[in-house]
Image (tube, rainbow, N blue to C red):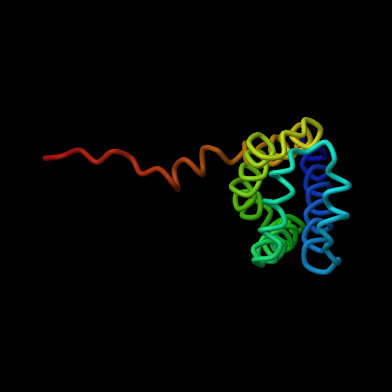
Length: 138
C-alpha cells in the first residue's frame, strides 16, 4: 500500500508538472493542436483554443504546477490530492462532452481513480472534518 502510494504520487507529480509547464511555457499553435487531435471532435479544438486565447489555461497550468508541488511532499500530498479532484473531474467531463476521445477519457479516468486511491485512507478523517454531525434541536 505504501509503495503504491509513492508510485502514484510520483506518477501524478510528473504528469501534472509536465502538463503545467506545457500550458505555461511551450508555444501554442491551433493548427498543430488540431492536427494532433484528429480523433477529437472539432468543437473540442475550438474550446481549447478559446481557453488558450483567454488565458484561462495559464491559470490551469499554474494550478497543475502547484498541485504537483504539493503532491511531491509527504506533509502536503493529501491537500494536493484533494485540490486535484475538481480539476480531474473537469478534465474527464471535458472528454465526455467535448472531445469524445476514448483514449484520453480512459487515461484521465485512470488518473482520477489513482488520485482517489490517495485520498481513500483518509476518508473518515475528511468526513469528520467536512461533514458536521447533526445537532439535536431542543
